Length: 73
Image 1 (cartoon, rainbow, N blue to C red):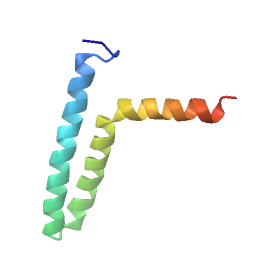
Image 2: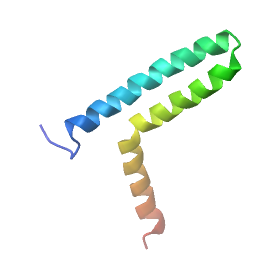
Image 3: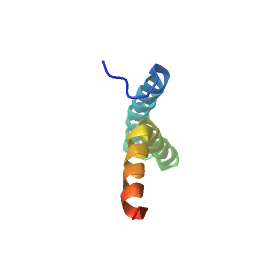
Image 4: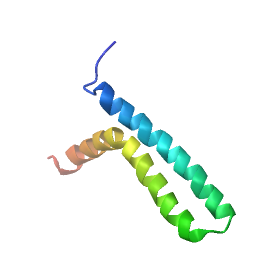
């Protein structure tokens, strides 16, 4: 098995953020159905931020690739 430079701890935290994003998304959906916007909006923001945190390494690689091609001459 090839190692890509990520530790087991980084993979565990990514999975944890992803599961948290799913849970927060389901809770936000429940709040939206109850018409409780004061709770639904912050929980939705938390779900989006948790999802972005779970994809942080993918986003970092993507930004590095775009940055190299955009500013490198």
